[in-house]
Length: 242
Image 1: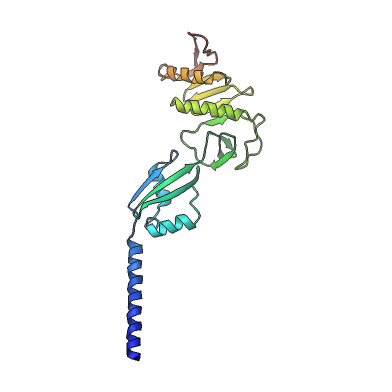
Image 2: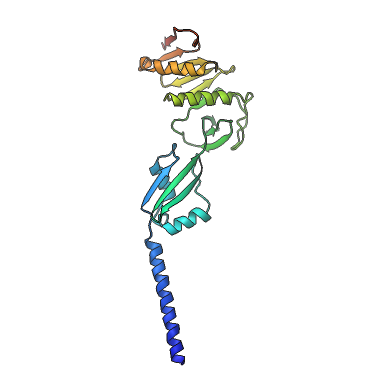
């Protein structure tokens, strides 16, 4: 009787060990083979994959699921958060939620990026491609996640309007300069474009788009502040650099 019980115990232990070994083998072998990335504009899909799936363990389906659900997410500059969705045990989708950024200012050797409301959302030692530098604003001490302390907060509405129009028309600029009256000047390599006030900005940017082929290779400043949508014909001044 004792031998029978001992044999049963050994069989149960052997079965349990086999289950553990098989489970371990399955755990180690279940690797994510396909990763798609959506919602990313500031990073390429390859960059996101390299940041989140650094080694073989990160590509293990079970470990990835556990890490995504119960561990703190990776901190990625200009990314608010991300979500990993399993479409199958070996296929996942990474959904990226990027921070809203309209421009940046230089402050104490760093680039301080702000959103449409003027809130500083990111501090970085590197420049984000496609995001214009905003100069001419007067401000005091800058703190992360706090509003950029300018005297006239309405300037951020003007910055948002202008950057959205530039993006819509596919116009890349290096800087947007504002004077004390809120007049805007674009810096585009060797060309400067004086837009003036925020009035009729849609028409001004549209005219700039039309003038860009003519400006190619030139150095100087184009004055578009005289644009008037009520006039059928408007002349603009271009002053070449000496």
